[in-house]
Length: 209
Image (cartoon, rainbow, N blue to C red):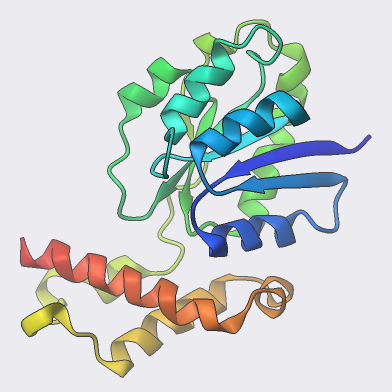
């Protein structure tokens, strides 16, 4: 039986990654770029699992989750919050909204598949999803950023926080090594520099504080 996954994330890269991750399984991925579109899709598609970014236009992931929990027909639907590597995750808000689990981006495709598969039985068996505690699906440093950005070895930010080609290439290598070959081949290569530059800029900001 095919299952429907509703993905709400304003990152085109994440939407492509998740779609390709489940392309060979018995899943239909419905992807939207904001929380308001997610609410509309919820009513139309009645998904088996919801993946919602905690920071996106319109309603955020916490609010989308709260909407699901208050919906008479979908209140037991598992909701996984997607958390950026440098996002401030509010665990209390996640619990109050009734989130089933959370996973940190960028994630290993296999970890996301395992998490979704583990939640599918709960979609029909659970009678009280609001009481579930939030579980962290994967807190590992998938890209090895901790090793690259050690406090005592952090790259000194220059004016305007410019990034050298060497720094971008180092992070790009991490991304490419961690994602499967099939996923890389199906994602436009021109998005990789955008991801890596954002990661480096965020880390440089942290080191400036």
